[in-house]
Amino acid sequence: MDSRRTKAVVGALLAALLTVTACGASHGVTDEQKPGQADPATPWSPPKGPGGAGGLLVGARWTAQWITVGGRTTTAPAHAAAWIDFGYHGTATGSYGCTPFRRTTHVTAGTLTVDAPAAQPTTGNRCAPENRAFEKGFRTLFNGQLKIARRVDDLTIDLKNARGDRLALKLLWPKGLFGRRWQVDHLAVADTTYPLAAGKAVYFVFHRDGTVTGNLGCNDFTSRATFSGDTFTLYRPTLTTHRTCSKDIMRDEQIMRSPTKNPRTTRFSALTDSWETDHDPTQGFPEFGYGFKALDR
Image (cartoon, rainbow, N blue to C red):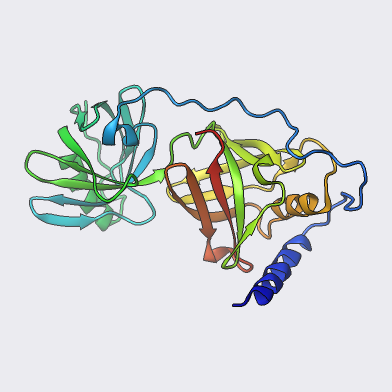
């Protein structure tokens, strides 16, 4: 697709987004506000953790990809049903694929020690057979001392026991997903990346209670969001200030306030200091997503 056609397609899609809800803000104002004048969120500062591969685990959430026990490999259930959240204070919470768990752990640069659980609850037949099969292997392996090793890069980790059994993990939620300032680096419209005029002024702060605060480039806002596995759901932002900025900034702000679906649900994938959402095909056309980058690293 040549550049003129790309711009035309993006323009048409953005126009479709803007016609969903009307905006009362003027695009011809002369008294412009400098973007991003809202008070910034408190800078995010992670607790101190171990170095090495163990330091990658702590503070982030990881999804299980597969498990190998006794030479037999079992693939994890879809959509991050099996996951582990490694806390900074010696705990790991998550789901085996059917059953939630909370374990006491100790993480160093190269090892993870998982204490035996007080009890081993089960879900019986309330879970899909493939989930139950994976859970059985997960429970067997996730005990005692495990070696931590990068598999390919900082986004993939292997946990191995002394017998050579292995649990393969992939980064699901980056460190500081909650409480950190995430710049909206770009929007994804169809297969095209759309940068925002206000740049770093556009940021979101996600809170563990489901609230979202931040700035859309000109105005502060509040919203709600949920994270479930690899699914991100964002409700339409509500402005808490009513400033006016340049035409381009106000246009971008309106795009982010005018989803075709409310709430809008997307799939997401994470890197170390950024994450992106991809369109969920059940939400209809036009496709839409977000690209987030950490503002405080």
